[in-house]
Length: 326
Image (cartoon, rainbow, N blue to C red):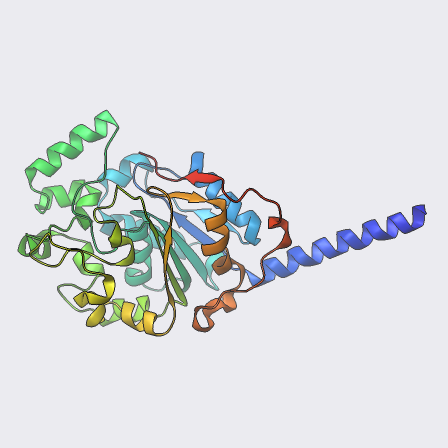
């Protein structure tokens, strides 16, 4: 009896070890870029990263830019992107490729890495949560007094002025539809990575080389104006009228950055989840994020690995993680 028990125990340990090996072998590392006013260490971002790493068997890294919360407000995105680029190129763990998860404005650091970073390791899948990809029409809500005083001061100066662009990070993706001339002339980041002024074929080639692009929109998001920007939808130029879906924008129809190419290849997932800005459930993480961390072979027409680990059975998938720091 004791001998049978030992054999069963050894078999179970061997089976578990094999499972963990196969899971890890199928997975590649991922990096997380957090949102505004947040930081990598401690809190919800750490919990989010650790959960996905544990579930997938992939190594997960939150990449900090500067000092975190303060620099997320005040450091312009060209500089944030340059810092991230150099950090990632020094990580030997990423040399064979990796996945990116962007949280809100952290998506711009991720996209900057994809499009602007020379000689960087290849990005396989890009998973965007509440990414303001087509811009926002107002500054994100601000609740911290010291930062808010600075933000209000800078916005009052004129959002497209050189000084504001250099000292207020969100200014790099504020897009006022009735001031497109000022936007294209003065906004220093979003027009560049969206190829809105000069059509850079390298940016398009790099972006359209992604295996999968997962765009997650939150249906009660009151931070992004409009929330459809998470899917590249936005107000038409010169008007505050009805929002154009991505497929009706020139960025898509003229394929400025390769979004249409990716979509027609079945590589774009337009995902809508319930909840406010960056409020995501374990169940939605499991369904919409985890499959793209499990298997690098998901590049085949955007189809992720079908089977998920059995340890999800019985878990309370309705539990929510709030990744919005404000």
